[in-house]
Length: 121
Image (cartoon, rainbow, N blue to C red; front, top):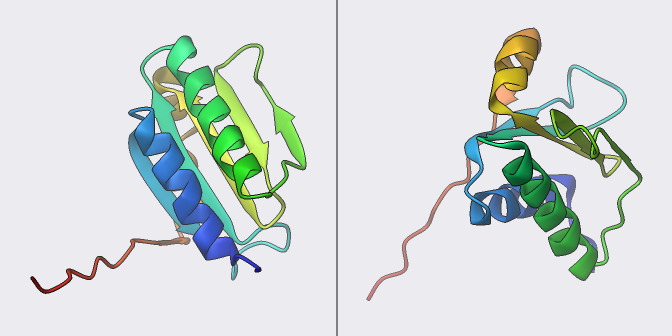
């Protein structure tokens, strides 16, 4: 079974959320870049939390047999980039996220939200 890049973005969102990541944003990059479909941007309040979020993302995707292409910034934990090809997760330490302000830098990117369908009782 093939999982779409949008579904991978939602899996990353859920994994980050499970570790209490702050301000999770998914940006649709398909019309703006050639190198990826989606950015997921989130942050943690401490470097320990930033590492925990990144580890949870990697563990969760590995269980779904989605392999990490590249990781950067893990040791410093100011900005951990997890590159899954069509989807790139950016896990920031709060202060670093504010400094780089990727959401503003990529301000033309459409924000993606998940439509929640409630099941009837």
